[in-house]
Image (tube, rainbow, N blue to C red; front, top):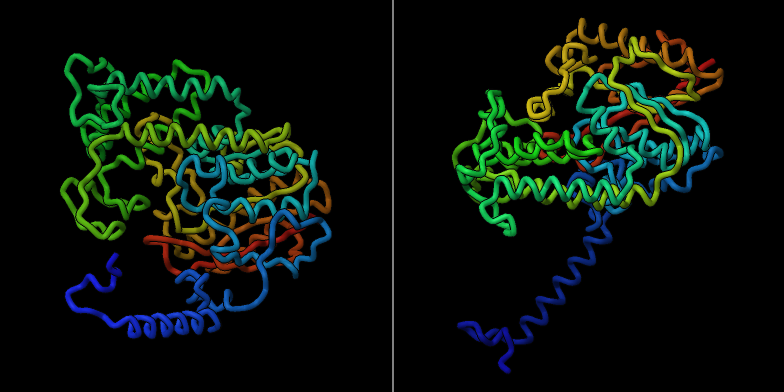
Length: 447
C-alpha cells in the first residue's frame, strides 16, 4: 500500500514530516506548561484571572455544616463542572434565563439545612431550589409571579407515575403526528397539512402566533395544545409544547434568547457558519423533546426523596408564607430581564395569566435611581416577610448580581445580620450574554 503522504502531487520526504511532527509535539507541550494557557481552559476562562490560580473549586457533595465559608471556591471551570452536570435531569426541561446552577444551591443546602427542615424560595423561577432540596430530603416551598415559571416548576417537582406519564407523552405525540403528518410512521415532517386532516381547533386568532410561526409549525403546535386537557399530567405536556415552540419560532438560530423580529428569509447563521433557512415545522421538536423529557423525568425519579415541594403562583410581597427554616433564592436583577417576555410564546400558546406589570425590577423599567429605589423596597419587603416566619438564627442565602450596590441597604431594611458575602464569576455565558459577569452570594442571618 502506498503511504498517504506519497499520494499527493509532489512527494514529501518522510524525514521532513517526522521533524514537523516533533516540533508540533514540543509546541503543544510548552503550551500546556504555560500559566493560564492550559488546553483545558475555555476561551473565557483564559481571559479571567481568577481561573489562573491553583485553588480547586468546591465539590458540592463534599460540603458539610462544618465546611468553613473561606474554603468555598465557587468559580467552577468547564472541566470541573461540565454542562451535563449543570443541566442534569429535570433542570433542563426548558431553557430559562437568569437561573442559578443546581450545584450552587446544593452547597448551601448542605451547609445550612438538614433533612426534614423546610427551605423557602420566594422567587422560585424555574424551581432549582425546590428540585435540589428534594434530592437532599429537605422540604421546600416557593412562589413566583410568573404563571409559566410555576407550570415549569410543578412539572419538575411532580412525583410521577412513570408508566402513566411516559404513556401520556407518547400518546399525545402520536395523535399529533396522525393529525398533522401525511405519513405518521415517518420521521420526516410534512411541509403541508392535508385538508381533510385539519381539526376544527387548528386555527388561531392571536397575531403573535401567526407572526412568529410558519403556518405548518403553528398548526402542529395548536393540535398538540388542544389535546392536553385529555391527560392527567398536563403541566409536563405544556412544558414540552413550550420548549418546542421556542425552538420552532421564526428566528435565527443564534438569537433564541432575544429575538427582535421574525426571520422569514434565509440568513447567514453565525452559530453554524453557513446559510440557514427559517424553521417551518414544530413536530420534529415535539418528538425530540418528548423523548428527552421522558429520560430526564426517569433520571430525577431515581434521585428524588419523599420530601414535600410546593410552588404557588403568587406575589411574595403579599402571599401567605408558612413557617420555614430559611431561604435560598436568586431574586430578579434590577433592569436585566423581562421574565414574562422571555416566554411570550408560552403565554400566547397556553393562554395563561400575564402579571408582568407586577414584576420586581423588570428590564423595561430600566436602572435609573427611581427603579433602583423601588427595587430595594420591594425585595426587602419580601425578605422581611419571610424572616418573620423563620426561627432566630435561620439563614437567608441570596444570590444576586449587585452591580449597583443595592444589597447593603436591602439587608438593613429587612433587619438581618450580614454574616458573609462570597463573590463568584459566572462562567460559560454564551451568545449575546458572553460578557464577563459576576454575582454575589449574600449570607444573612436572622438575629
